[in-house]
Structure formats: structure tokens, C-alpha cells
Image (tube, rainbow, N blue to C red; front, side, top):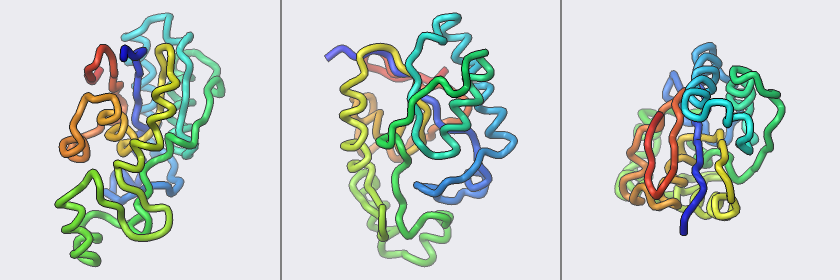
Length: 197
């Protein structure tokens, strides 16, 4: 099935990103670098799409860091910062009891589960309420992706980007959890492939 292009932006940096903490579904604000990355993403979109960028439907995760990234990149483009929709299916993967910890903390305090995750990063679900596997996130975002019928801008999260890659067939389930998802850049899904801009 031929799909319309998707322009995917991971939210800008937060202090928790900088500290290597698992944010999951915790609301964390952008830091100064993250605000700059949102504007940078807007400039990259302008370079990619020119004046056509204003016609893109824009959808964001409901998390504070994604909404502020969307509003910052839209402002950098001279567009109405509020001219986008929110879709809860784009919220970040839930890390449950591990949210707020670093991976070093997780390995120290929960070594058995940490090792289980290392054996199956795609299918592993952390402990605690609201926790999800990447496979569960892929099932959550699939209906949204299947409904897109024209080029669309999405601002979401690293875990969601990995789920989108697998859902669209541009990465394998074993590979996607290991891929770096950049901030301030555009991940373009088009023509059955993916590329960073």
C-alpha cells in the first residue's frame, strides 16, 4: 500500500533527556536546548517543503514536551502555534515503575528484568502500572498511521518513532529499539523508506 509522506519530529531535549532518565509518560518541560531544537526543526521543515509546510496537517502527542516542540516549530515557521491537533495514541511508551530512573539505575535495582529486556527489547514490558512494550506501542499507533491520507507532520517521542519505523516496514523489530532518534531533526517516511533531514 502506498502511503503519504510523514514528517516525524521527536520532541526537543528536556533535563531528563540530558540526565539519561526514562521519561515515558511523565510530563517534563523542554529545556533551553530543547526550545532551540524545536525552532531548528521548523527551519529544517521550511528547507524541505518551502511554503507548502503551512498546508501540512499537524498532529502531536498530548505530552507537554511534544506540544511545546510543535508550538515552537510552528512559531519558527510563522504559523499559528496552536494550529495542530493532539492524538493520545502518540504518547510515549510507558516505562511503568522505571520512569524517572536512568538505565544504570534500572540495571542496578532490577537486574533480572533488565537482562530480560536486553534479550527482547521489542517485546519486553517493564513492571508497573502503565508500562508497555514497543510491540504494544506499534499496535496503538497503527490505526492512526493507517488513517493518514495526505502528507502529515507528527511531533512525538523516540519510542513512538521506533514503533512507526516497524509499523511502516522501514526497520525490523529487532533493530528499531537500538536506533538513535535525533532531536531537532526531521525523520521523513516516504516511498517505503526513511531518511533524516
